[in-house]
Each structure stands twice: as C-alpha cells, then as structure tokens.
Length: 561
Image (cartoon, rainbow, N blue to C red; front, side, top):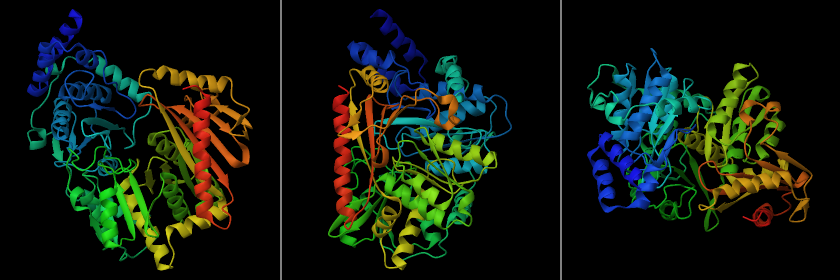
C-alpha cells in the first residue's frame, strides 16, 4: 500500500498539469485505494492505433504527462529527419492542449511540425501527411469513444497507420522516456512560438478536393434532399465544402449536432452504430422528407447511411455500404481487371465475389484499417494493380487513393453520387442491392459479442478450445473445414498474419468467425450466410439475418462463455 502512495506522489511531482496534479493529490488524501490502483497499476500502452483511454491523472489515463512522454518516445523513434510531422486534433476539451504539447516536444527535439491551427477531421490530417510527404502524423482524437476519453493516433512515413514492429519500437522509447517535467518542450507552438512549426496552408481542402474529384465518375451534382449529422464532431465544414463543389446542393445538417462539441450533449456514445445515436437525424429526415441520411463519427473517418423505407427508415449495414461502394467503383473503372479491392476478414465475403465478377483482385486482411491499406500499397509497389477501394464492416471505407486510411468524407461523397445516379434512373439503393443479391447471392451478416470484464482470459481460452476441438456442426449446418489463424502465418501474406481467430466454413451457405476483441474484454462471433434472394428479397433477407443471429448465439452458448 505504501508503494502505491509513493508511486502516486512521484507521478504527481512530475506532472506539468495543475488540474491532474490536484486530481491525484485528492485521491492520495482521500486514500482511495481502488482508484489509485486503477490509475497507477496499469499504463496506457502504445499500439498500432496509438494510445486511447479515459482522461484523468496517472499513467493509466490520458493526460498531458502521458502525451508528453509518448511524444518524446515518438521523437526518439523518428530520429533526425528533414521531413515534417503533421499534427491535428479534434473537438474534445483536452485535445488542443494535448496537440500543443505534442508540437512542443517535437520542435524541442529539432523536428519540423506542420500543424492544423484549429480542429480538423482525421482524414484531412492523414491527407496532409501524404501531401506534405511527412515522416509521421499525429491526430489527437478518441474518434467515436465516450465523451470522457481521448487518444493519440499516429501515421507512419507513408501517411498510413503504423503496423508492427514500429509500435513496439515506439513503446520501447516511451518506456525509456524521463518523467514528463524533464522532457524538453516548447510552450505555445500552436500560437506561433517556434520557427520550426508552421500552420498547414489554407489550400489543404482545395488539394483534398482535387484528388477526391478524380475518384468521381459522376460529373454533376444533384437535388437530393440529404440530412447529415457530424455527431457533434469536426466533419461538417470539410464535408459541406466537398458536397458544394460536387454540386449536391440539398444537404442540411441536424442543427442540434451540427457544430463541434467534444462533450457530446445529445448522445451518450457518439457512434453512428449505437442504438439511438441517429434519432435526431431521422426525426429531421421525416420532417424534410429526405432522400438520404448520412452520418460521420466525431473525427469523420467513418460513414453511416440510412435510406427511406416505406413509412420508415432502413439503416444500411457497414457491409451493405461496402459492397455498394465497391461495385460502384469497379463498374465505373476504366480497367477493372487491374483494380485491387480489399476488406477485413470479418467483413462480408460478398465483395470478393463482386471483384471476381469484374476480373479484379480482392484481398482479405487482418482486422484493422492499417492492414487494408498495407495490402493495397504493397501490391501496388509490386506492380500487381491499382488499389481503388477498401472497407471494414465497422463503417470504415477508403475510396481511391486520396487518403491512406478510412475516410468518411470522400466515402460520403461517392456514396451520394451513387444514390444520385440511381435516382436519375428512377431507382434506389435497395433496387441495386436486390440486383447484386440476384447476381452474387444474398449475403447477410450478424455479429454477437460476449463481454467478460472479470475474466477476459477465459475468452482467449475459449477461442483456443474451439480451434483444438471444433464442432462437427453448428445449428444443424455441417462444418466442412476449420481454419486456425493462430497458425500458418508463414504461408499467408503479411496483411493476413497470425491472429487469435478461428473460421468455421459451412460450405455454400456461409461461415462463422470467432475472435477475442483486441481492445475490449469481449468475444466476438461473426456469422456470414448466403442464400438465393427468391421472389421477395427483403423478406428472405430478414429470415436469413435472424438465422445468422441464432447461429451466433448458439455457438457462443456452446463455448461455455
């Protein structure tokens, strides 16, 4: 117990932030052992998505001291370089201060910085890193995490998310960093205090638009009535400018959620996938008789879409948006036989079937957008085609080569173009989905999650047990083959390497995938089923979706977790 208090005092003494110093002092004086243990016994570890966590005092929370030491580790990893680091931040209350500390440590280490002076969407920061040929980029954002969180996301020298072993090397340098108050840092860089740091040029959106426009096949805009919500995030200004230049003149934002506000006053969990998150958008869409509802998450790297459906609304799944965008881009490509598309392994197999129909190449990757982009760039480097599209079922998409990460802004534009093309022909996105189902099979996907915060190790053991003793059948469907992705990585491409994932192949009808979450104490079960759409595709879709959900629940129950 005395060691815990001593560690807390040492942390307090090295913390440069009066607010978190006072917070830690109060915990010490109150003798709050449980809270001190939570904050001091765990350390936010740098991974391929950077760091992310609850804002507060201590090494197990997001705070200025953690950001300063993390940036020191990043600077040591980068070493001497003539290339700049791009820095951006979102609208969360602590983000600007964290970004200023990031810039301050970098310039004190002699590294040039190109910074966004005001909050910016993550895809625009990633684009700026590519445009400026930066050695790295940092975005201070917690994306769609709860309001109390913040994060620190890093892009590498190719303006794509870092992958191992870079994360391990950065983490090693962080561990060797001195206490935060001993790290050299220049104050007020975002205010212009260093000649090594300069704001991003005002024409960055112009350059972004020029590249996005090259991805378009549509040459005009539309009068579609579009309701948009940025979820209190930072996407509106850039998305509205892109839509204006494209000629989509009927877009309006949900007033209550239109402006950046990192406290997220109208949503408890600012994720478009969460139940209730789009309620205000749908209420407005009813009033305005909208043709389309689109949403970005707070840092604008994800896209959600909802369509009119009789007297109500039908949210499209991430997989449905993915296959619609993938087919649209392939069908308008000048030479689809040289095109490369990619999706994470837990996304629907339907994109692979569509790619095959166009003679294009499809790649499956590990979960995480960094792997999707790595696959596309690596194959391009080998001269094996052009990477034109990638997606993951969790509403992440990249269209063209503008941004080497998921981009909810350019994806929103191309999806709106798709809807406008269909509307010009008197059709809807559901008409197009029905067509694709008839051509490539009706695919549905369901995901089940089992949360065990008190015994996360049981979830890993459950996956191991499933791989070692797989069932002969699942819900009456014969298991034809089993693939254990913990093994055999040497025979697969680097973007589909070793991971705790088991696939049960159910033959023609589909598959089941099981893996522990990489960020939460959850076991995730993904079910993808295929069938013929029949005379009533929507009714068959509902039946198949229910069947997929039941299969996932039955398998989870049989695993004993």
